[in-house]
Length: 450
Image 1 (cartoon, rainbow, N blue to C red):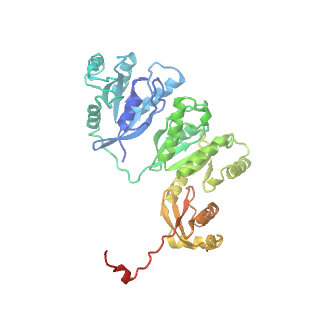
Image 2 (cartoon, rainbow, N blue to C red):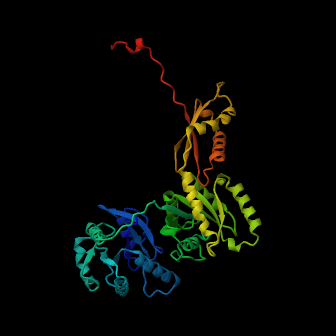
Image 3 (cartoon, rainbow, N blue to C red):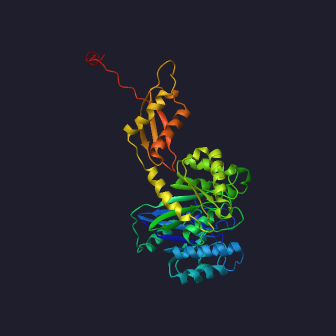
């Protein structure tokens, strides 16, 4: 279902991210007591009573700001207003009305969208007299404390009322979530912009520009995908600021909630130690995965460089042998749309099931190669698939302790040779074969109670 968007708009440091987190019952937005923390638009689903909607946190809008950051934030806020069904104009009850508040109100009114004027930082009923200063901007005001929850129920009821006439659109398929993951400055935001067909993400040659995980809807041949752009992940020793630390946490959370993680590597530089750690995080998460060698437009000898990168991947990230690789350029959009057929294939592979009879045939060879355990023969009784997304396989043995890691890896290779499971990790683990219940004679079973 296509959900309506409720965008929170206002000047810097009025409490937009705090309100966003309270409405969504999350900590998806970074909140610090300093202006300008939120730069990109962040989306997260919320529910109140029987109404489900998407909340959008936007950057602090400075009408007269003329530096690159301020202009970029303004562009993002205007895009957010354009996409929203309802706009919350958030004001600061402590600082009072500012000139920018009037200008922002004029922009919202010009959009023609439904809007709710909210005065934040009214922490107690005794502070209600502060809202009188805000009547020049609107007659219907909602006093709240985003931090402490005062007035929150009344605001949520107004949001639901404002959305009552919104027409939802039913989707016949659920959206696939794609997280764009990689270290700083490998071109993740450029890729997202190219996929969306517009400059929604901030792009900069300065590492660390994107600090939040940002969701956007991407449409390709009638199919909708959720693209999650994330902050570049750096070594822990270099994560000194609170903001940077939380950005890394959000990138990890983005991996947790995605279906497919696109691991971006700078083709002109190759893989570094941080790339290995990021790849390990994705693999351990059990999510589908694609490796993108980005910035292919900077490579001169394509054939030679592809061989070098493939060997490097095989040597340093040997555990990703099942992952498809693509060479692309986010800047020139070279081969960028080729990721979508690969994504669809991986999703199908993650849902694939293999019959127990077929799997049992594969493990016979492995059983013959396992040494005896304490002088007794080790038997692999049978193997069955127990999970999907990611696919998981349980091998039952009379002596599980005799089955080593190399045996399980061999079984995984056999499964992949036969059934591929391209782009998705698979899990193979061993369990003790359940003992059959011992037969009890009728005479013993009828032993009298004493």
